[in-house]
Image (cartoon, rainbow, N blue to C red; front, side, top):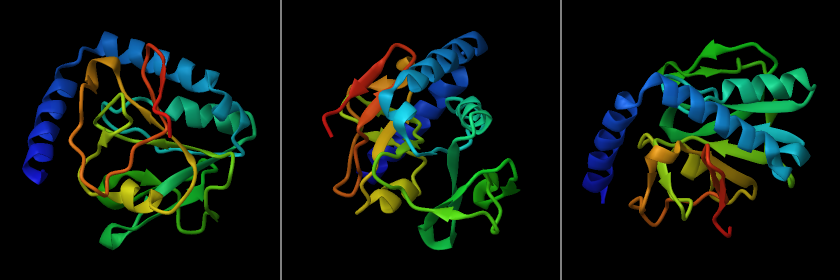
Length: 186
């Protein structure tokens, strides 16, 4: 399974690199519109997000909208040994592991509560809500044993028929593409 996932990661990264800029911008706009239309987004006390890097689906506009509305946005902080926590985002960032921007150590640490929403990153995913991440397992470990409504952002052109999954891979509750919201039944 490890080899199949590694091969799929290489394939999907090549597909992402080949996407043209117009499609990236159009799909980002459609995905943002669909996120903002979700009742779960409107009702969330805190939205647990991540700051997109490179050609990931744009989350920065979503996070900025939350801040502009005076709502809570929490961002992940990666720790050594595969651990992760979330802290409230107030506009201050430092460079974290892997060069990913994250809230500084002094930012208030938060845990998901009932009614919160978590946006989970992925290279691609399928309609069952199984996702292919970057391979470090941070989100699967973090989400194990926690109850929070999860959503994965995925460009329609990267939506797969079936993503290979191990026993410890967790599905998300919905997949959001530029064309719509796919509820997985979780």
